[in-house]
Amino acid sequence: MSDVGLFLLLQLQRKQRNMCNLTLCVLLFLTCSCSSLSSCPAQCSCETSAVSCVSQNLTSVPQPLPENIITLNINGNEIWNLNSESFPRPLEHLTNLYASGSQVEQLDSLAFKNLPRLKLLDLSNNRILGFSVEALPKDNKIEVLNLSRSLYNHSYVGVLADVFTHRLPKVSHLDLSSNDLVLLPEGMFTGLSDLTVLDLRNNSLVAISNDTFWNRALKELDLRDNALKVLPNVTLEKLSSVPDLRVRLAGNPWRCDCNIEDMLIWLERHQFVVDRLNLTCYSPAGLKNVSLLTLEQPQLSCWSDDGHAMDRVLEPSYVFLGMVLALIGVIFLLVLYLNRKGIKRWMYNIRDACRDHMEGYHYRYEINSDPRLANLSLNSDV
Image 1 (cartoon, rainbow, N blue to C red):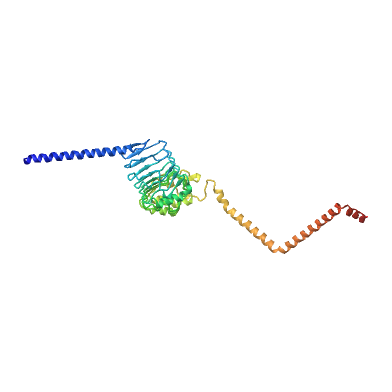
Image 2: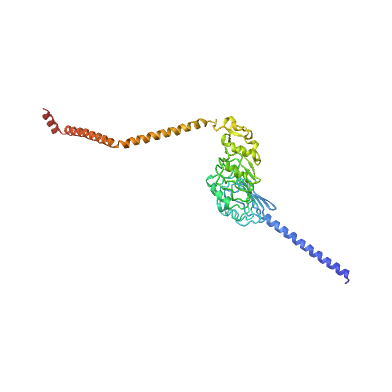
């Protein structure tokens, strides 16, 4: 056989091998696709690596889930409890879990133990009453956590603070808006070293602890529509020390009296309050809806016109009246002490007089009750 024939034979064999390899690859791909599609849960739609089970009246996480799943959407169901059986086998590729509006009430221990690569967890619009500290593994990869309109048990805010401190090492975006929160534990977010966005709008926060938001990584802080009346100097200093921070404060009922002077100076000096032009007074009535940046010092009276002025005027009178009453009480006790012997003698005399009087009544009763003594009494009178 010539060299040319041998060369052509080798080329033909190589093409045959390539065709065989290509055929095997196609068959393998089809087999994997079929296996993935076959594991799609009922009442769900599966597209490549995404599974959607929205508003299907599910009472638990659908099973079985494809092994290659990346995104799971179970919004709008009735899954009141997430526990260790919700994800019974490891899902190494699942990174996005949406469970908004699914009536979730309880997050039990080890609920997400088999989701090691979870990065986005949306639990908004639920009614969470219990959140186990061990629901999330310590080494979880969660970066975005949405708990908006979900916290119905404010008594465990301390538990949530513990979760934030010890169970969210990678979180960068935390949404706690619209939860009617009134007070936050001091240092609640300081352990979140990667936290850059914190949303606390539409709550009922009346005060802020000194170190609540002390986090140098924080870039966005939303405190709109709360119940803040003034920010103390210590809080202003803490916020000023966080580099590149952007704060939103509109929609709070600011009290424009002499106590807000330092905050006004702070607003003029710093530009990181992005909505400072929208900050307006809520009280006193004479300054309502007036922009904070247009206020002048003479307008900031220390006497409020919103109905509390009279109480403040009367406070010194109440104190003086209390002191007078206390002095009268002391004098009365002192008089009693100095005349204790005369008072004791007077009480003894009253006691003896009452005793003699009662003995007379008792003697007459005995005479009237005995006929013989009554006749004797009459004869003696005769």
